[in-house]
Image (cartoon, rainbow, N blue to C red; front, side, top):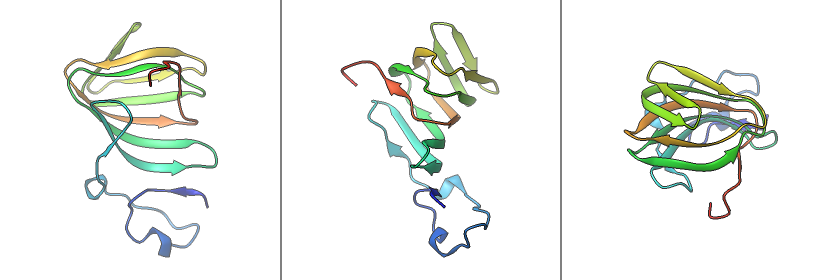
Length: 127
């Protein structure tokens, strides 16, 4: 199995087909390359690019221009996420088709659960 939860205690001792019970409170917030954007990776498979993560965006945080290489899904838990097409408020869900591009912003900050089949491709040369 190539999928893991970084920082999950005891996962190395589990049988290959055992369930992985993850308490996000036990995981640390990690910085991303983007100012004001942190994450807790809940599931990562480096071999395929599969990723599930909690994201915490500080007020005013911006994710620069990027392309969704595969379908991306986001459920906003707190705050709001916006881009050129609209906004997703707390308790709402948005998914974006393969090939879609946008700049994402969290004017007041946000907490989100996001699912990626493959990593985003960033198009801004400064990122």
